[in-house]
Amino acid sequence: MAGNILKAHARTPVAPKPEFLWGVSTSSFQIEGAAHIEGRGDSIWDAYCRIQGRVKGGDTGDQACDHYHRYTEDVALMRDLGVNAYRFSISWPRVLPRGRGVSNEPGLAFYDRLIDALLAADIEPWICLYHWDLPQALDDLGGWQNRDIAGWFADYATLVARRYGDRVKRFATFNEPCVFTLFGYGLGWNAPGIADKAALHKAIHHVNLSHGAAVDVLRASVPDASLGAIHNRQPCFPRSASPEDANAAQRFAEYWNDAFPYPQQFGCYPSALADAIEPYQRPGDMAQIARSVDWFGLNHYSPHYIKADSNLIGATFGAPPDDVPRTSIGWPIVPGAFRDTLLDIHHRFGLPIYVLENGTAAEDKLDIAGGIQDAGRIAYLQAYTDAMQEAISAGADVRGYFVWSLLDNFEWASGYSQRFGLVYVDFDTQRRIPKASARWYSDLIAAPRESPISSATANSVNAIAAKG
Ligand code: IFM
Image 1 (spheres, rainbow, N blue to C red):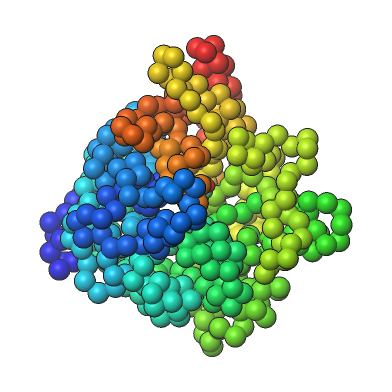
Image 2: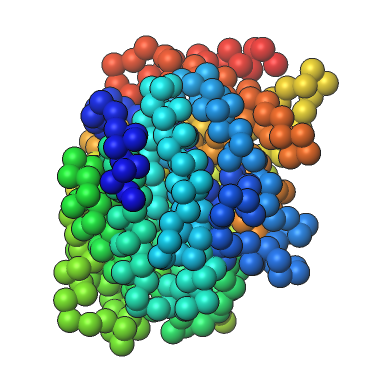
């Protein structure tokens, strides 16, 4: 079946764009909606949303931004922004309702339409295979705790690669594996809501195995593809001077920063994790995980201030020191930590870096003229893109920057209460309204420059401030 479809969509060969990429990122569950139509299966997030008290306000992904039906409008918004790349994720249960076996043609066809619309707008599509919406049918079999998932994931990756690989050359295996394993299996804060040490360690290892397996099949199916994984990485500072917090910060950093990049790049787990994961390892696993990739995908928002805790990893998030500015949802604003992280990744891993998420939530409100003057978001993005420029000037090989997110969307356990978009979404009417930050980002992208970013950013911010 895949062969015929491939023929139907054959196009002039597409190559990865060589220039610096300015993009936006989204994910399937957070924007698509259309959760119960055209053959889509349930994901663990559909099920999690149904459990009372798990998601703020009882919100669900049923409608989200209705992107499934409004993708042409959303691609037009991206074209107006001037981005040359867009990262989205495939909903595994939309294309394989039971996670494996029979594929769902209407779901596959949706991504055909989206990809074709992006290419027509000269926007490079970046596919992320997994942004947290595991098919419920696979969770019923143990989900990431079941070692067989590496094979299921490889089969899913093969389907995606064969279907879209004629037009898509950028593939990421996973988005933020540290978050969905730690929050979903270790701390019980996200779907599937488990808090169990063994579950966490199995999930970590099986995600790593799945990454390696997917890299193999992507390389085999799309030989000219450019591949990577998307990791969170940020300094984990101890919240206080106590030795307990110092230990906690170190332990937390191993789960957060190193549990995936280390095995994937160096073929080993960080020391504190190695013993915990050993029972689930088999001979040959580490070589299977450490497949060569082409870039390091970085998601970065803030540093963490970590304190000791009685939870199963002995560490959790603490409040930042009083003198550290914070966003409306309390996330520390420390652009220097972003610069240092980029340089650290450059020296540690030696791969080209794409920043695939950076941005901020804000309390966006319509003004009397019907616009959104999100000066705080502009200031955040200004400071963080300046920090990226500093890292580039100091030698970091950064090749792209993607804002999280194009649209306000479903922010996991916080429901729709946190708005991260450059574009405001009225969730009652689905009306989209570009915020002042969208204009700021277009100006940044359009600014003439020799290096990726120049002082034109400061001018455009002043211009927006002057417009009020
Ligand atoms: O919305 C999330 C996204 O799904 C993963 N990275 C962080 C974003 C903001 O919390």
